[in-house]
Every structure is written in structure tokens, then in C-alpha cells.
Amino acid sequence: MPAPRSPRPAPSLRPRPRCPRVLATAMLLVGCQSGTPADTAAQNPPPQTPPAARLPEPASVAIGASRRTAVVNAVARVAPAVVTVQTESVAQMPADPFDVFFGRRPGEQRRAGIGTGFVVREDGVVVTNAHVVAGATRVSVAMQDGTTYSARVVGADESNDLAVLKVDAQRLPVAPLGNSDSLLVGEWAVAIGNPFGFVLGNAEPSVSAGVISATGRNLVGGGQEGAGASLDMIQTDAAINPGNSGGPLINADGEVIGVNSSIYTPSGGSVGLGFAIPINRARRVAEDLLAHGKVRRPWVGVVLRAPEASTNPRELLSAGVVVRTVVPGSPAARAGWQSGDVLARIGTRALRNPFDWEAALLDLRPGEEVVVTVRRGSRELPTTLRVADLPEVTAPKVTVLSELQLVTLTAAIRTERRLQATAGALVYQASERVSTEIGLEPGDVIVQINRAPITSADDVARAIDYYAGRGPIRIFFERQGRYSFTDVIIRQ
Image 1 (cartoon, rainbow, N blue to C red):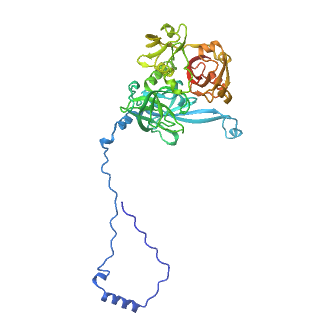
Image 2 (image 1 turned 90 degrees about the horizontal axis):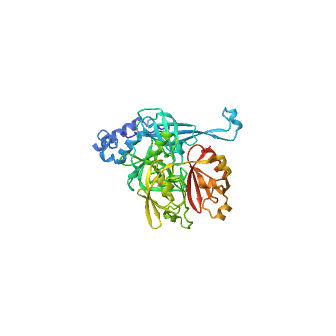
Image 3 (image 1 turned 60 degrees about the vertical axis):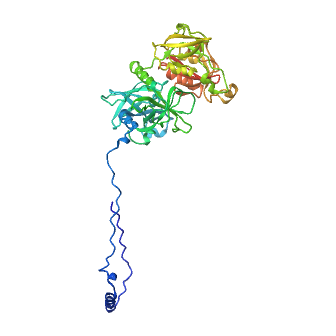
């Protein structure tokens, strides 16, 4: 690259002194006579400017094989099927007198959202998170090359935080699906998505790499971006940030092994604790949504005994799964279960606490049979359980709300009852029917319904009013210092 030339000095504005011509001639003669050859200008020309310095040329434009790592090849295999999910929702706002002046509809504000998804079928079927499209009035999907399609929501399962979208397109690139049951702790994991969405300003997904930190993680409580309690999750230290939701977590073979869903963070950004929904579960949910528009929730017909209260929360990890009540005529009753039985294993999976049991149910479909090992006294009995569909609560939502008296949790109530929850709705009274069919008892604190946090008694009424008739409802609650949940279907 040529070196820049030095600028010429500007000509002086001072007047030049006039010298007598004779003096100038004399000086010239003296100089020529007395000067040596080295002193003359003709024999000693001024030094020339050295040639301009140049940076080294690139060694080669070819990419070495050592740079094409397993991660690079895996990303190249999946990235074309990763999409940006753009949403628009309308929020009701207080009326503003300027709305009429500017031609806007009063009391409404449009909000844009963004997330990630991936194509699972070449005719335009896309999987993403339910919370990405929740409340959206318009959804679109942008491919890696910027091509954008209008999308419709085929169905969503808020309990599992999964949704299926459909776009009118053919021969789209499809992400290969792997097997989340064969994951190895420590193997490579790559998260692909759109972190912080509109900030990056293009449709191409970004990539972050890490490892599988753990499997079978059960998360209940705050601190998660993406909200809600999550069961049987894949944990990874690959960076997952807002906007990554719904994107694929892939292995080194370029197969999708999970759906990025949430992070645990004290700061709002990634701290290396990311969680993904296992792809085997996502596949089953997507198939149900495509076939029925909703997820068929498995039902067994047992109420589990709440673990004993303890000052050490880690004791819950080994509290066991103890049957408190068996519903007559239920699958559990037909399997021969009794009150006091301890559920030890389902298939080959050990059951250490109620969350292990609920996580195992997520992988079952109504109509399937599974062997459950029951510990009764000193004996272990293998039983055959045939899972059924979750029955609807016989009472409609109006009756449920009238037979369930709730009080907003206050600091005084929390201190008096020694509760862990900082916000929620306390069950003050519940009818026998509500207690039997829904599983809530006086003294329980409702903290979440599906993925909506509960901060007051009014929140419960609004959530039941919204979700009634739409499919299964998952109610999370605290009982005797322990968190649990129950699944119900409430009629409209």
C-alpha cells in the first residue's frame, strides 16, 4: 500500500530580500572553486524517498480442513432451517386525547416481539416456544435469506412451552431431529437463535457453543427468563439470551436435541445456566398439536402426599413419591395401587421425588402402557399402568370460582403461615368437589397458572377465565413449604 506523501510547505508570505547581482555571482564562483566533488549539488543528489511499505498478502483464500470443526459442520447443517419469529400484539392502554388527533384507535398500542423457531417439515411446519407467540395477533416467519412468510398458530401447549406454526410454503430446509434420550453430559451443545432480536438488525441466526451440563433438571421458582416452572429439562452453558427462545439446541452431528426455552439468571442475561426442552418431548407435543390442535394430557388418578416440611430444601430431592389418594375407577385403581404405596420406578427411570414422577408423565401419551414398580412395605411390586386422557372437571369455571375462596398473599399472612412464596393467592376455603377434582386444599398458595405468575386473587380469576375451555391447565402451588402442581381441564 503506497505511503502517503508529505505535504509541500506553503510558500512564505514574507518579502524576499534583494541581493546585489555581483555579490550573488561572486558567491557562486567561490562555491564552485572551493567546493570538493562531494560538496557539489550535481555530484550529491538529494536522497530519494524509499519505496512504500506494504502489508503481507493473504497466504491463501482456501479454508483449511482444521477450521472445519464438528461445530462448524453441525451449524451448516441446521442453520438454513432456523427462522426468525416476529410477532405483533395489541395491548389495551388508557385512552389518550392525542390518539384521535393522530388517527390512532384509542386505548390500543401495538407491540412487536421476536423469537426463534426451526422448520421440522418441508411444507412449512415450524416449532417454537409458546411464550414467543402468546397473545400475538399477527405472526410472521423470516428465513435465513430474508424471505418472510405470514404464519398461523396451529396450536400451543403452555405447560410445555411449545407451539407449532404453519406457513404456506413448500420445499423448505428441514432441521434434522436427534434423540434426547441418548444425551451425554459433557458432549458439545450449540444454541442457534436471535439473541436480543431487533438489536442485531438482520435475519441470520447467531451461534453459541457449550456443552450438555446436565439432563433431567426440574426448575421451580423465580430467576428464569422465559418464566414458569419447567420439568425434565436439558441444562447447557451455551449462551442463551432473550430472543433465543424457540431456537434449536443441536449436537455435534448437526441434530436438534432440544428447544431453547429459558435461562436462570440474577442479571437478565446469560450466566451459563440455560435450559432446553428435550426434542423427544417436543416431537410428541408437535404431533399432538398437528393432529388434534391441542395436547392430550395423560391422567393416572392419584393424589400424592406432600413431603414433610423441612428446613433443608434439598431434602425434597429424595422425599420419595408417596400415594395419598387413589381415584376410584382411575388407571391407578385398575393397576392395583393403594394409599401409602411408594412409586419407586417407572420403566427403568428411578423416582426420587414428586417432580421426577411428573416429569416422567410428560413423556407418556394416553393409551400407552408402562410398568411402574410400587414399593409396599418391604416388597417391590411391578404393576402395569395404562394411561388415560385427563378428564374434565365436572364443574364449569363459574362454579369453580365460586367454590374456591382466595385471598391475596400479604406479608402478614406469609409471616404467620411461614410461607416461602413472596406473592400469590392463598386458598382460604375450597369445596369438597374442588378439592377432589382439582387437588387444591385450604392453606395452599397458588403461585402460577400455566406460565402466568400469580400475584393476587384476581389473577387466578382472570387466568381461569382465560384458559377455561382451551385445554389442560397446570396450577402450581405451595403446600407446607413445598411446591407442587396439578393438571386440570375446566369447562367453559
